[in-house]
Image (cartoon, rainbow, N blue to C red; front, side, top):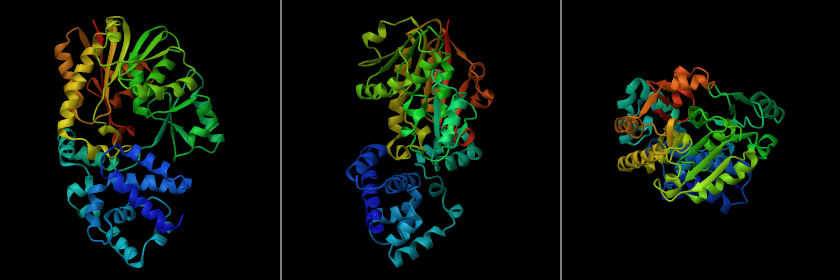
Length: 419
């Protein structure tokens, strides 16, 4: 495709994404499906440029004011993540001169808001939690793309064997620093076409998400519930921990999310997983299991702000009011899930949020209302599960994962045992 036409397409895609009418990943996917004539490199350039603009939207919109022409074209040029020669050929001489000038701006001298590229309410909350010493490294980390983490399916393969198989395919993968199941891949290879993926030996899953599954301590022959299963990434990890024995329920209110689990389940080789669509957390199918379950994982619906490296549009689509509403829903879901846990059983509450309102505050409220649940120290649980340097992952009794400290998405977890 002619460079100018490709830059115009990037601008058109940005125009759709920046309307914030829907999640960016869905908008990008739909746009690329409408333009099937694009090659792999062109598709990659459009997608990565879009996410680059979303990450630094405040800064790029600020400097774009000095240029001329459609705003989205200027943003596409500023955020371009494709071949530099393509951009050079797409721009007029005046545009190239303007771009060189704005790229020379000293970013360190800009106001804080243009450096961290976060809405005020998020920046204020994180600064209050971390102080400036922790906030700025986190803000910098959130402006970078996330790595590609894989979870080795221990039911089918060993990590070193999968690592060797990927290396033979030219895919560089190294063990993750904490999870005993994880591999971190350099770049963005076409993983879904590889033999290890097709054979169900690996699944794409952030290392932090793997650690949540490990916190459950799920074992052979037990009854386990993944209460908010979604597309089932942690369900599959739990099933492998259980060696495909016992009974594992994947509950979710979304039929489409559970449908997305089916092909992954088929590859996994698991036979103990039972996907169940529930109408709400008080569904009769939930009540039938009251007091019978060994392990319950509640990866609750949340703001998703721990995944901003992957989903940078979330910081522009969430609001303080939405977080307040989510906290109410999280408490309701956690209360309902707790009824399933049998005496001596374990309950794990988790989110991929960075905010105390969705994490420590919800856990503290639950602990105050449920005196028959004792908070367990996550460092000891992770150590028992074979996690390296488990103490580095804990803040008090809770799991707290940060992109700038641990290289994972941002996660929180609290774990209780029922008396």
